[in-house]
Image (cartoon, rainbow, N blue to C red; front, top):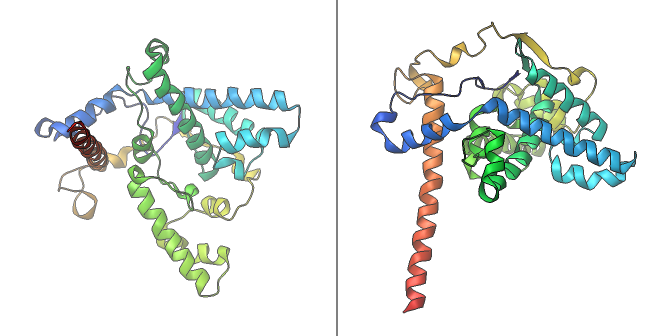
Length: 292
């Protein structure tokens, strides 16, 4: 299976505070409706099928397929052509279908899976609204739309590969990080450094890995970075998320990193819900005024 920031095989998360907080419980109820393995599988399979159709229709003409890549793979088309993207998608589908190993992805693969999932979720959510019986057959989220922004916040380690592109306010933690990185890069460039020198100068400060640096420098993916790294599913790669934390990691002493992530996610979601309520309230008031 593909390894993300959290274990995608765990579909029934429980937060110790949800019984005391109705908004947190509503958020956790939504989390319990998600089947992450199927969501990722359908996302990759959908992207692979669409790309295969475009490759066949283009008959090897890269210019013909370019508009499709820009629309379907807005981030990853910058470092890979159609054939390379197809190879990466096949590797990820095969890795995801393996139940014996976790397959870790580098920044290049994360960008491809991000593009793929974002595209599929739009299709899936439209099915939920317009053809719910077809959406139900996919068994992704028990009749509910998928919140891709929330999923990305919880399951991607970072969105460094998205640096320089808008993320939207629901990606707030990553958007804040990316804005801080961009600000420091611009300072370094302003002092006379090249883009590469600027990124290397802040690499340790922001713990940016080498592959992300290569991607941000606009380097095409090479053979070395076309590999997924695997480890047995018996290895406890998510163990660090469970123990209770102290100090700066926990919002409350005794809270695990996993609990904290869900709590933060619920706050971001409540922010979105309340914003929508405010919009609806204003529209209702305007409607009353117009009727008068």
